[in-house]
Length: 405
Image (spheres, rainbow, N blue to C red):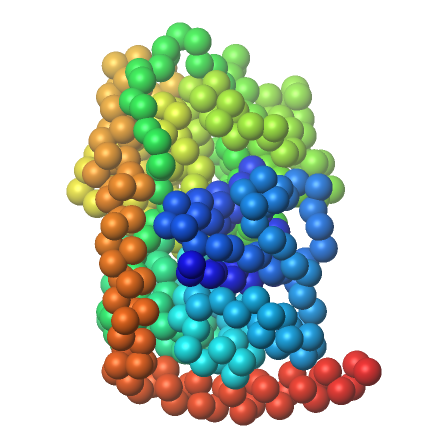
């Protein structure tokens, strides 16, 4: 039996973020392929984490810079290791290579952190996205991690293109695997029974907090004037005090915190508003809108890599005045609203069904297992980075371990 070890700095929280849903989806896929799975994390338990024991998955708390992890690797002896984000590969990848040199190493990027950070800096500095600065420490670290891995899972076809053109990453070590819909049933919702606007997003994620501020300061005051009876319901895990202080029932701007069910929250709303100014990857909230029959108004960053040439399930606009007018139109016009719902269903069927990618993913894993040595030999830069990492990172980690004794 194939054995998979997943290493993460967090526990799986599918109701808190799209990243949590994505990880649970990957776990279920590997289980469907008869993998035995262990899940190891440096995090302490969370009250909101998914109970992996329900899926017969063994969990393990692991420590940074501690050789006990080496002993753990030898004991479980996985033939495939998946790193949840590049920071985890930095911390544990060299140990996996040292103890289990023949284990396949897969990096799940979630999104390109260096792209998100570059866009955030462009917003701060009021510069154009056309001149993004990728000469950053985080870019060098993230791209090095991708080169060191045998395969990196990329959720966005825009990021697939960026990696190959800007960073010259070989296509052979990349695999496009977006967040997917496993079971989909296109049922036309009732325009009359859905009410109010909604925004949802984990507040640990900076683009979500920025979007709420844009809604609060730039969009909602004017939108409320045009639709005085409407409310905007804001949901998100881990709201800080600065988030909660925005709650204002008189303005119809309502901060609810964590949603018990993201599906219920999105299904009950008439329109989702997502004025996302920076970010990367696939926006889980917008994919859920398509799945649950709720149109959205978002930006070009929000819709990036999600619809190709298909019409959006609502509107994609970047100017605040147009964002407001399109939100009013979508909220008020039943025919336009219904067409938007159908557009979302078509996008899912063309791009985000689970069945589109899974057989190709399995074939890629099987090919890696059969030809791992030649696959690595074709990636000289990865071998070079691995050579130096095994020394620099190893000795730094061992120094920290000795210092902590």
